[in-house]
Length: 166
Image (cartoon, rainbow, N blue to C red; front, side):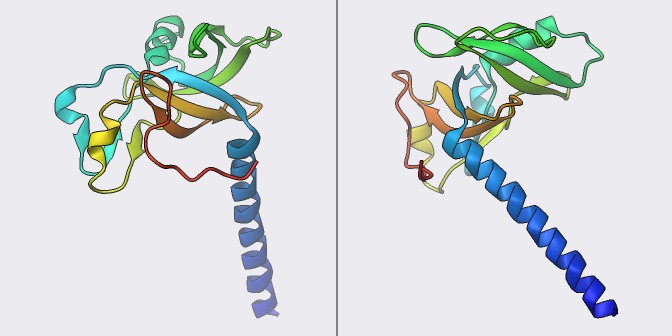
């Protein structure tokens, strides 16, 4: 009987993990696209090992707009003429107007964090990512962003990233 209980728990755990993976893959394949401008990062710490530290320009606007005690939430961003999303307002449940989108953020270490603060790449390929100017994200309906590519100044993807079937 005990073995059956352990088997059921493991089966439920594996099912939960696989559902989570499937949901993430669906966002990466079908989520709304958002482009965020990268904010300057101290060049002395830009490259450390096989990753690039990331900061986003929109995070500074969010930082100025949110109360100091707020640990996270959702904002509204809107794509400009180039397709780069800019901060519009704090999300208070208002209706969105095209091309506005919701974007989740968190406060970490006295700053605002959007998605990830690092981009990992293959060893020996750091040079090609030095030209990164934008991050390309896929966002779910709740505004949770997933970084998929770094883009250069012409909004072209840098490096080879596996693209999920659409």
